[in-house]
Each structure stands twice: as C-alpha cells, then as structure tokens.
Length: 149
Image (cartoon, rainbow, N blue to C red; front, side, top):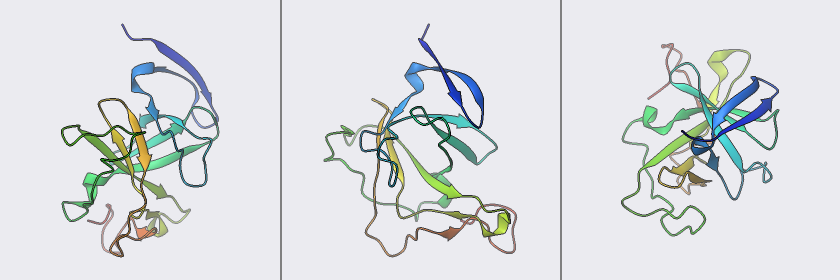
C-alpha cells in the first residue's frame, strides 16, 4: 500500500494523492521557479491538470504531446543530471495550454514541453530551438471542435 499525502488546492479543494504519483521538476517551470512538486490530475480527455503542491492556487491545463502526432518530435534531455534520463527510460511529455474565455482562442505551447522520466518521476521543462514549434499554437482549428493535429 502506497503512502498518501493530503494537499489543499484552491481549484480542487482537499486531495489525497499517492506519493508515488508525484512529479518533481527540480528547476521548476518557466516563470515559476519555486513550483517544483506536482501531481497530474485527470480531467476531460485529452486534457489533464498539472497541480502544484507548493502553491495551492497554481495549476496548469496540459495535454499530452502525443496529441500532436509523430511530426512533433525533438531530442530528449539525456544529458540532464537532474532528470537522470537514459535512452531506455519511458517518458511522458506534456504541453501547457492557455485557456481563453472564447475556447476557439485557446493555445498550446509547443516551444516549451515538460518531459518527465517515468522511472524516477523527475522532469524538466525544455525550451526547443525549433521555429516549427510556437509558444501559442491555436489549440482548435476553425473547422473542428477538437485539438489541431
């Protein structure tokens, strides 16, 4: 039986989470260097919430990078000691979403994905030096009601 941790959040109230599901981001997120511990909360597919443990009012809507197809690819941070990522490790990759009051104006950040080593649950937000990946890609195409691919 895994250890549980109770956290209070502004958005979701009190949550009880398994300690083994924590995600550690030793460098924090861009603009939020103190936000180092997170838990991923399922939401409505394809979206989830990345809830910060240190800052109860900080939570990000995220989407799995797999939603953007095989064309969205980049080199993983294999040399980063904080993440301790090996070529054989499985990873989860998330992109932060900016939700607007008008959902058709919502965007996703493809320039700075969050890469998580699933072996040790440590991750890092990486900044991609690739002009194909914008910081504000429209999440929805005008003709569809689903994320763009």
